[in-house]
Length: 332
Image 1 (tube, rainbow, N blue to C red):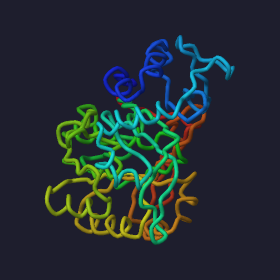
Image 2 (cartoon, rainbow, N blue to C red):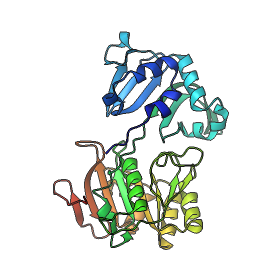
Image 3 (cartoon, helix red, strand yellow):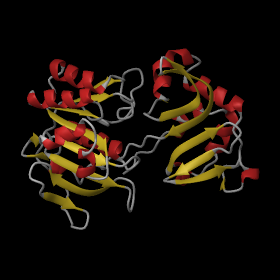
């Protein structure tokens, strides 16, 4: 079940009037399929549905003819940035250096424009010309298939979700956190304390420090905190039974995973890749896999649909626990 996104509450308020009016005219069925809204100066407004892009007409019709499309202007971009930043763009300097701003609901607005470089590092962006509004979708039940492979006998197995970009790894992780936090009567699991480091504010969608999505009753969130710092902080201060974060990458991230596991805390996280062998070739992550820090590999793809679980593997023995070609019994 995909929880309905409140377009009126989270997306429309950050769009300039003409574009907001056209988006509101999209049919309800289309709105629930939208994954991105792309704005570029002098170009048609694009509505992404899956991997397909469509131009937007002022009456809410999706078209392929440029001459009939709503064209984004420089003023539209400026107005959108004012709305996104609540007229305080300077307060988002750190986010702008990362190239995105996260808004209420966990939606992420990617930003492109003219880079200002200082000592070889990106200091800021100016003359912003492109915005990519990526809609976060809370999909309850996304982790139904994987839950019994991660939680068994009251114990949480440290798990690495491996997925190419835009294949649903964050959606799966979010629902796995919710189910572990909430517990499952079907699986005889009462629930566990989970510490979440949400560096990009994409998982919990925190607004003023409070999650805007349902993560269950036993989750503590460090919002906007670097993963490596946050994992250790949570282990030391919040006594979690599991810590979760998204997109491992740095050597500091890998070391934090080791420290959490040595402290007896399970780790739930993700990495980009097509399979375990691909993930093992990634710098800093390969040693974690070689040294068997994880117990489960969960492989995702976007075929036939985004979020498809291709296989679940015992990371230490290599034994295949589930593959899409074979059936699997799930709770309820």
